Length: 277
Image 1 (cartoon, helix red, strand yellow):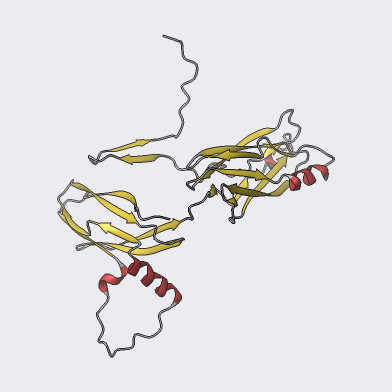
Image 2 (image 1 turned 60 degrees about the vertical axis):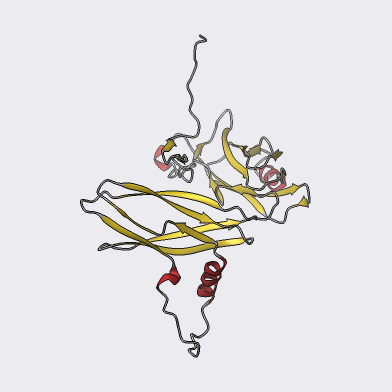
């Protein structure tokens, strides 16, 4: 939480054949001012929360209107002010003259000034894996510290050990690095090993304890792993595979002060083996 806003830059481009006049509207832009004696009634919980966001000025958009000639483009800045610890969302409208309005949902979350760890998914469905492997398959699971202080994490592997014990003491699941530290805004990976013994489903939930310089953090995290084993000789009975990395972004874009956009299609690039010189 702080006073400095977060800014997201959007690019508007007129791809049509005629000039476009646009206006960005917030929910209260179309409200009619009522007489002092009028009773508007009690607002719904959702409407009251929306009014609270508008009164606090949590979101701001600049500029709010403009015109674009054919092929012309411009930048639109959306500001999010972290004034209170909460999740905020606001439905806004981009109105184009003689066109259909576009609904744009703004969402933001303000955190405490403490360590805060994020898991990309609620449940991790590992790809179907054949039984009888000599070595376990390793899956990296991204964790990130969204807070401003260093955090320590510890994954409780006792449910994992119990699952393995109930499967003839076979190492179905393993966690290579069940504990570690992350600096502010740092990304690391929890390396999860999966080696099914039988053609069946496996599931385990692992609590994660987080602490920072002030002690244990109140946020609760659970690493939920789901795995599926299948017999390699019965390929027709192989379960349908779910893309393990389906929620990861395909690219990340950057806008400089001069308004030029740059983007990377992948977060890491493997150049292979290179000769020196």
